[in-house]
Length: 229
Image (cartoon, rainbow, N blue to C red; front, side):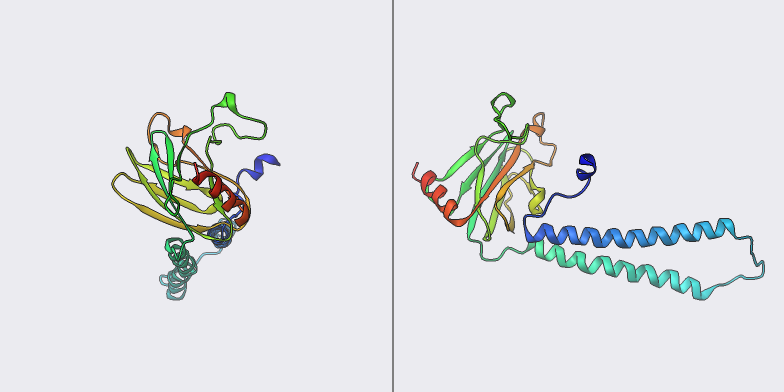
C-alpha cells in the first residue's frame, strides 16, 4: 500500500495546488468516460454480426462525433485557462524573496529586510540527523509565514535551473539574465521539499529546495534573530 501512495500527487499546501489536483481529478473522470465509451464500441463491433451493405452515409452520427469532442474539449479548456490565470497572478505580496540558482546550490535574498541573505547547500549524507531525508535536506532552510502572499523572484548565475516545490504547485525556470516571478500562499505550517527540475549539470540531483512554513509569531522571531547577524 505504501508504494501505491507514491503514485499520487503530494498533499496540497497552497490554494493553487489544491485547484491543480481538482483539475487533475476532473480531467481523469472525462478521460475515463471516453475510454469506457471507446472500449464499449470496440466490444460491440467485435461481437455483433449485423451489417448493412447499402448504408453509405450516416450524417447524424458523423455530426455527433464531431460536435461531442469539441464540447468535451471545452470542459477541459475552460478550467485550464482559469488555472493558468490564477497561477500567473501575483497580488500585493507580504514577503518578497529572490532565489538565485548556482551550480549546485541556491542563494536566497530577503528583499524586505537588510542583510538577510544566505546560501542553501545540500546536507551531506553523513551529517543527516534522525528524520531528515537523504538528498533533500539543506543546511539553511527558507523560512516563510503561513496565510500570507509570498512572491519569489527567480534567476540564475550560471546555467538554467528550475525552482520547483510540488506541494505548493510552484515551478519556474531560473534563467541567467532574466527574472521570473511566482506567487503563492501557504495554508498550513510544515516543511516542504523540492528539487531543481532542469538538467543543470553533473550535480543536478544535489540541488534541493526546502521551505519551512511557520506562524507569524515564529516567523518574525526568526527574522529578528537572523537579520541582526
